Image 1 (cartoon, rainbow, N blue to C red):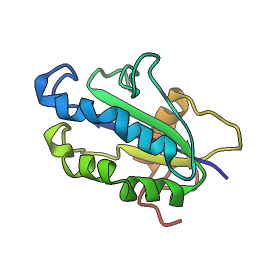
Image 2 (tube, helix red, strand yellow):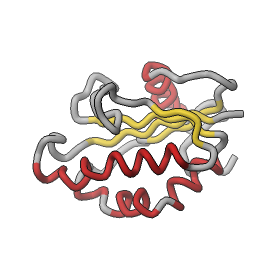
Image 3 (cartoon, rainbow, N blue to C red):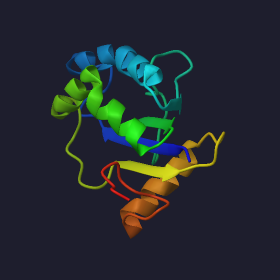
Length: 144
């Protein structure tokens, strides 16, 4: 069964700030790497850019969003850990993002052909934050 995943991050500076330039300059390549990865199905995209930075979640302008669909958790993990440019960006994330004080990533199973909405993703992350991991809302690190 396919897997939806949401991850959000609280930016330290506006995306137009020169201190975010290294992050912004990597978006196209990191997202292209995801789209080329085995098991990738879909991702939320801006109409005019390589990422999904124009979308807002939890009514906050300082949160950026990544919402995607994968064949399964193993395929998602293989990309996140195996794609060098993504791995490098994760290593450097403290330069661009605040340290999370609560879960910022959630995964959940979806039916074939379903495209998750931001409202659905927000609800799933809220469920994980309030109730902890379950079969319907679990962290990337979940071992099932």
